[in-house]
Length: 347
Image (cartoon, rainbow, N blue to C red):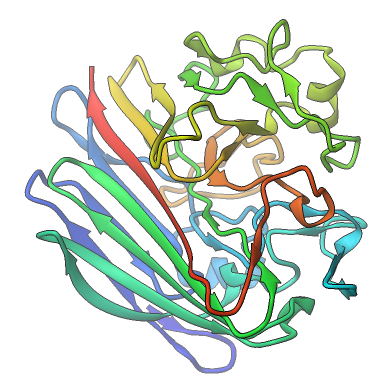
């Protein structure tokens, strides 16, 4: 595809299943450049947002994190600081006073090593990255592996694994922006969303969790019944004002099961359906609030506010500073392992 500013070669891999579905991923940031799925008439279309070339990803810094692998820590850490075993670590800060998605140069800007593999008869791409001790301020040398698998059941499976030589914190996710009507085809306000979550973690004005866990009952954050994304997006509810839409961590129901049915999204015009399953305890639902029309997408169409949505499976934001949240600590000799599945069909 080209080279980075320091001359590292970047490669593109395309996975295609027997149904014709295709996912294309590059080694820069582990970024998914395209994901082509059929509508109810069998017409394939790219359904993820992104830039047309490698150059745009590098030159813009991919500020929206289109399609990228996120680490070491997905979401926000308050003031870019946390304490482990009595030692306080200061991270690079890139979101006002906070650290977002791993800092100024997170995994979304790293070059990953790729290997073509097969998993249970399905074509897959294994991406590896070695994160040095002290990178962006995080402790420990971290060996990370992310596998993208495309099954013949039209499932995009993402498996995460990591090991460390020093106690650290890890929270990995993948940051596709979806528009099931097709990339660049208007906004996602008419998509019908169901979230299997009774609770969420409320935030302060800088979008850092308050430490509480609150019911979605009676709030515009309640998607337990299928609801258009845009139905309440301009609500005066204070939490919604902080985020200018949806940008919230939902606590998933059924966390006693290894793989949780987290969410489903239906787009009425195309008939496309996306179902999300995960081993993670939470999912961040983001409605593309910060898109402002300045980004020109792959087909030369601008991305206005709400041009895409994200369902980022993860642990809670700021968990290293909240002892009552599920732990994100990883110890030497232990294996970090999480999986998520995005299954596509039509109605």
